[in-house]
Image 1 (cartoon, one colour):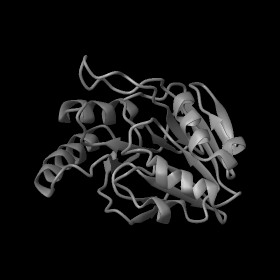
Image 2 (image 1 turned 90 degrees about the vertical axis):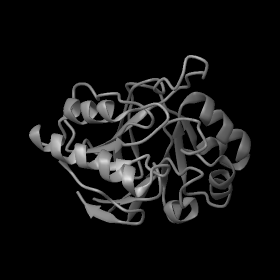
Image 3 (image 1 turned 135 degrees about the vertical axis):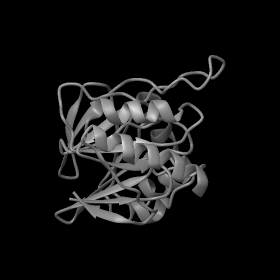
Length: 218
């Protein structure tokens, strides 16, 4: 399975000529990420994880792309892409389903707290093929499963370095790659990822930086 990182929180998985995409948001290369994909997973409604206009245009322009998203987001997609409404499914915690030939499991239920005055929205994390966990905007630890690959939200209005490192330690994946990093500069990246790499290694996790457009085989 090939994993390709796009800008910010968007990733694409390719396997056997089929593709699945998670979180093509407003900072991401939406059309490139979704080109030829058969499945789209959305963790939550924030624009940096779902560019509703661009994604709905892709949904309307093809009959081969299906989407899964939390209830409110699924409704938004159905409204924005009415001809694709039957291909938009509601994702809830504790589900397991197949999407584009990939096995998907769902974990968690809400976005991490930004501030008490900022409403908390639904957030679903996805494990793909029992191998890779994309948590969206949360530090949910998937229960009852050991994942080999963790996608780590390294910088956000709702996190700090201590929480990032504790998340890596808690999941204990064999490898980890960054997501949610479009708003951090090179200096900040060096600091956060330096800690992630050094401390993650103490607990058996190899942390590696990926640039947008870079792919790895997992």
